[in-house]
Length: 188
Image (tube, rainbow, N blue to C red):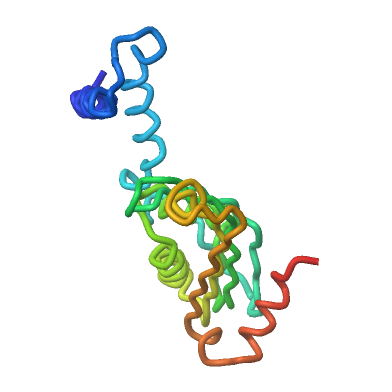
């Protein structure tokens, strides 16, 4: 076990005690270590970089029409309450001589989602990352997510859904381009 993992497990042990639990009882004895490992996994985006993730998977292409990757599932943690938010990300870009390998879209979403985060910033980070690696004429990102911090606590609204969008380049400048993207991602 690494020092960081042991330290994090110790904090979880203190949290359990602070809640009035006995962290040594049978059902909780291994929980601090499991929780620490889970948190490291859920926030592994801090250990990744965009360059390493893309790994030169940008390819020459004559494609210059809209490319849409839809319904990329995402799991993130709200930085305000450290509770999950879960949803889907839709991405479009207008290539300009280069296209990005398909799996890299999901990896980029995961890298930023696997950090303590708010949805508004996540949407922007994904769009800016795709723009920077592809040099696209435009990038659009829409995220739809349900937030456990709103569903499990506070106002407890079970059917709430937050939608955020970020439009860069041609998607920001052209209503027609933006509308084409938004129409393509509408559920049928």
